[in-house]
Image 1 (tube, one colour):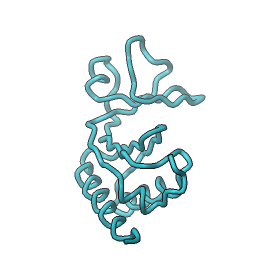
Image 2 (cartoon, one colour):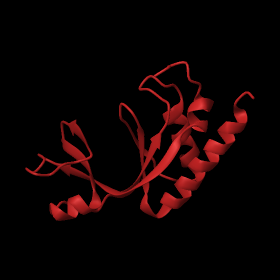
Image 3 (cartoon, rainbow, N blue to C red):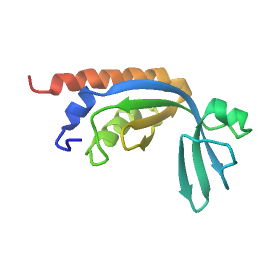
Length: 135
């Protein structure tokens, strides 16, 4: 990855994908056979992010539901401003955005009832960023 990629270039080139409904569950330990999408280990316990259907099959709580949006874009873990721009843009519309950066993609978790609006906002941001690029 070329770390000289500008924020505008990253935004203009992102591929925005809706990935379904996921839940966040706080557990003392991950039950055998459960395969979460992501885990965060904290002193209070382990938070797992898992698809809603897998959580239901495993009998896990499904109270904390979020729509997952994946951004496939030319970024790196050293990118500057991407998470802040996305978070601020969605926050301005009162949309919660829990962000998780993987090595290759950015993952956004937004309220289920605002997922369509978040997708629309992200697509608008992409189109705006295209206009900011030099011709």
